[in-house]
Image 1: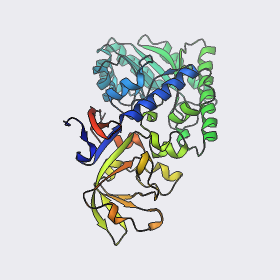
Image 2: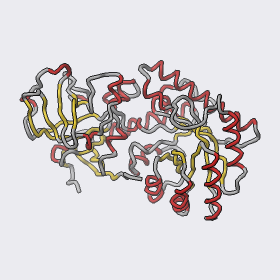
Image 3: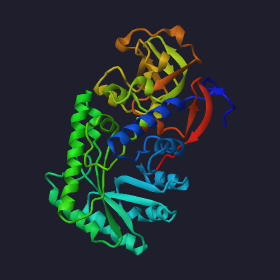
Image 4: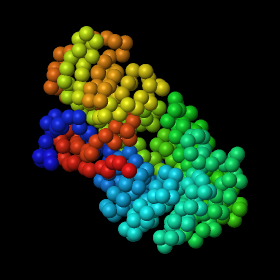
Length: 385
């Protein structure tokens, strides 16, 4: 447990730090934007995986959340969240876990893009005396999962009928995720993706309705498209998630600013390697993850970017150039010698994560900071499946 008003410099490292003021601001801004655009906000909790964060993200909204694992769903159900969308293709063998969550008094919404899986889920749910809402996953350009509303229109309708005709399932609507927005190099490019996401998911909804099938919910969302969509006409809810924390990738595509990254990893300097020109810290591949997504836009991002003054990257753009399990190697772009005297062994550095979801998954708690850098709380998070 923390001591009252303990400063983060006294924490064990590596440690996951969460700036409360930035988190609050990020949640308010996204909530206001969704209200302005006239859609429900169903925040995706796969990044934060924390009830305390979820309460901030849902404040002033209808209270529904999105999760990526059934363990998350159980965790949030235990903490009073009653409207949960499990936004991963459902495997019929997991019906027992889903039923246990439903027995807690929750509505657990399932997702599929497969007729056989939907039919088998219906059989197993009926055996348990359970009925689940289910949504159809639609691919609007991400090319990961889902049915294409242009080339697989018949399959969408056929799947809708399988769900709608089952007494153990309820056709709730359609869902998509514009994951391709994470590869957009400009705000204008994000806007193009956002409109493709909107048009595609609305098209899928229209297919179901034209076939006489219900489609009350039209669910979309990624953080970039939620921020920059020019229209959400026809969409009923959005499911952004990483906006709560921000990260290097989001900063480089313009989805957040550097000073609105709420999450950092605190690390200790454990060595100097003057032969290679690198400073060694105790935050390696496990503490930071090995996600190098931002390298698509900036080759000098490596596995994380060192924070400087004012919540910005250091002017010299020091970054983690290499990692092993428990070691991170700080370097300067171009291989210049680092300022050794600024980083004596035992000193501390804060590092912006490349991908907040992946970095946070290595840690079991957040050390929550106030504006003065005092640790004012520890918030738990759920990991695993």
